[in-house]
Amino acid sequence: MAIVAGIDSSTNRTKIVACDAETGAVLRSGKAPHPAPEGDDARAGTDPQSWLHSLGEAAAGGLLESVRAIGVCAQQHGMIGLDAGGVLVRPAILWNDPRSAGAAAALVDALGGPAAWTQAIGAVPTASYTIAKLRWLAEFEPASARRIAEVLLPHDWLVWQLLGHPQRRTTDRGDASGTGYWSPVTGEYRQDLVKLALGHELRLPEVLAPAEPAGHTPEGLLISAGTGDNMAAALGLGLGPGDAVVSIGGNGTIFAVHDRAVVDASGVISSFADATGRHLPMAATLNAAQVLRATAGMLGTDLEGLSELALQSSPGSYGLVLLPYLDGERTPSLPHAAGTLTGLRAESMAPHHLARAAVEGMLCNIADALDVLRAKGVEVRRVFLLGTAGRLPAVRQIAPQLFGIPVVVPAPGDHAARGAARQAAWALAGGAEPPRWELPEGAVTTVPDQERDLPVGSAVRRQYAAAREQIHPETAS
Image 1 (cartoon, rainbow, N blue to C red):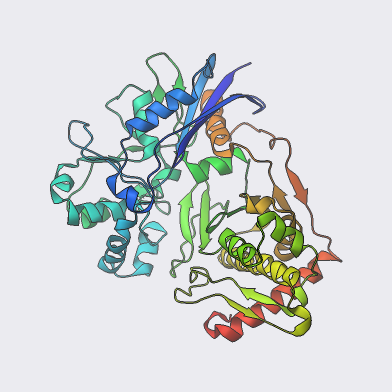
Image 2 (image 1 turned 45 degrees about the horizontal axis):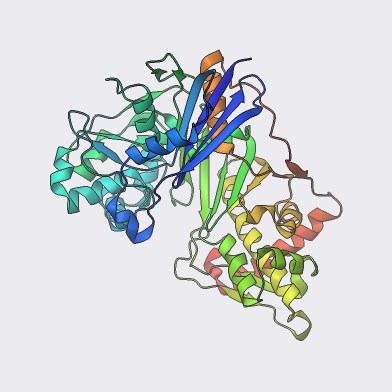
């Protein structure tokens, strides 16, 4: 039995799984934390060596024994700047560093607005994108900016370290599509955009084909191309065309597998590449799990208590509608909006109706984002629901009604690390498609009843849309 391993170096920890290369069964696993600066703390940057130390701790106890190939995925969008000799110029700047927001806005204007960027790279760069960090560096740390000769992403840097610092630097199309200077539409780098941001061109890593190995370690282990964390999660879950992921965290992340890049002049959809040769068009909502947490706090309970209350109500929440724009909203574009509760009547003013209105409002907002993808020709036939909030009983019951399609809730697991391992198995075996691995045990699929659930869900969404269009008429289709 061949064994492969997947490494997921996320924002705050390293996870490693060793899997059967043929079936995907997880044989061993390990994890270890590493520094995860956020907010103002992120300004200090991160020493990439901490990721290597964390990797070593996670692999302790012989976890990688008998492994023949390794795949690496990591947090996307980071910036590791090296000088002409391959020496780190400054600590790595991560995706969550807030300082580059102004730089991103300046870049959007410099190229001629959102439509120009979507034509160039399929997306409008935000503060998290690597290119925004380059622009920030040029403005606020010009001496460091002048020294930088090449830029690697976190997964690129880890692969380079595992391979023993070869002259060749590599990346993959999935992670490259989050830089802001590689286009998933053309499959090419845009050095003109690099120069626009930094003032000079850079040496950039070679973009490998999905199953192409990056090389072998000095010990002879095959290292696959690697990828970003979202792309690895899609690979670990076995997503294909027609599948979408809804990740309910503080924000809502909605992406689907599609055969071609999506160019959306409005910038609502960001076009990313995946790790298989396809694409992952993505939309996002600013309001997701925190809508439930805020409502639970107002009702004096927690998420589990909110879920129990919501299931005591009925579809439509007795007329209550919560427009969940607590922090403004990105999809739809309502940056200055606030949340709104409508439909208050004596019979609807009860905790369980408010609890259900919060769940329905959050999910209707996500359903609207799915419709934005569909409007651009992206087929969505099944949704994978991720995140702690996605496993709440109320969310699991209501989501299939409102989405109108089967909803899969995978068991908690290291999906990104498993996806990296699947890529390693693919690079080891070769072939046009990755090996077929079954979804990990514990996944629950709910198929909405055509006669019962779909009419109910449609009525709830109409009620929500009516309230949204009355309060925010600019959202009317």
